[in-house]
Image (cartoon, rainbow, N blue to C red):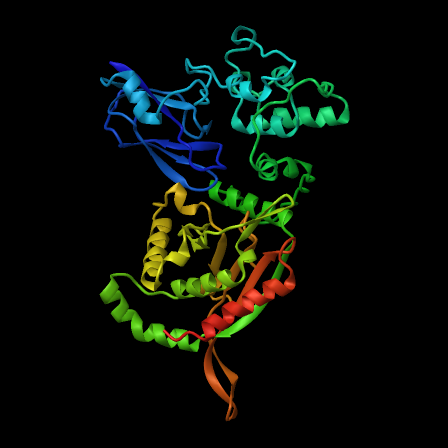
Length: 458
């Protein structure tokens, strides 16, 4: 018999931890390889974690609702397969720095090893294993904060932890940073003292992630409660959406431009073709893939719309990955992404839209289905709204909202003169990051999308 460690999987570049929602097996249960062992949730999506080996679930190391760092050992599986082979199959060749093991596991957490290359030239000697509390665990989040604030390893070891097993939590290290800046904590390190070598690729993102900006905000005033009321606790997804929306408004100065489009040709063509399309292609033809077609064409004309801002650097995205905001039965919102949307024809876009929408509504999205979006489309008209002022989906710089299509009498200009006709009209609104997109560019792009829709010929 051999024991195989099951690790909390990495769900994306920016995801450092996940919450265990439910264990589908209990200790002593038999489990097959690739069988669902537990359900987890991140700030992006809920997902199942399959077993990496067949055998008996020997031990569960974290309870339900526990927040676990990526790479931590979450369970142990007893199997007849040789341990070294199982471990290699699970995560590839093992190294001393690969996992963030919890205190209960026999493996040492990566407090020192990841730092050797970055501080080898420093004058401060690295402490040995014996001189460091071997059970002290530092999460990737804490290491990110330490790196961005210039906190040395020796300083980090002196911070008293209030977490489980005396671990240093985000609250602990932010309190330390605040006291140090006020001159009430440990004195700032000397120039010769090295800081932690755990460097985030995007310090702005890391700062937002661990809530430094949020900590500076004043506490909201309590709302007086009287009369006949009912108090409901926000569910996990609603809390995540609320936090994401607040951070977006704090990050980007939003500007919203409006336009309208005569989409009569598009609507009539779809009504004529949708039955044959579904019969021929095996998928429904909605308006969304037609909107995405127009957006993709215009992004190619205005590439700055498909970008991100990191500090004072503009990152132009060459891939056009269109997010489509999708309402869930619970009333929450999620944004699955059509990767490389410019590589699909109309049929391909229709299939992608329908598949992602179905998976979203049935909780079948994979983590990669909601990552790497570069521009977002939201259809507020589905719920009857004529227009909206959408909030940018960070780290993107623009989001387009399409409103309800209404028949209205409008003036039609022709070479023979003006006339009044009944047309299918739709408002478009686009919010954009005014740090890099000026009104002229935002309005020009929006007008271009409207003209693409108006000139639709099937």
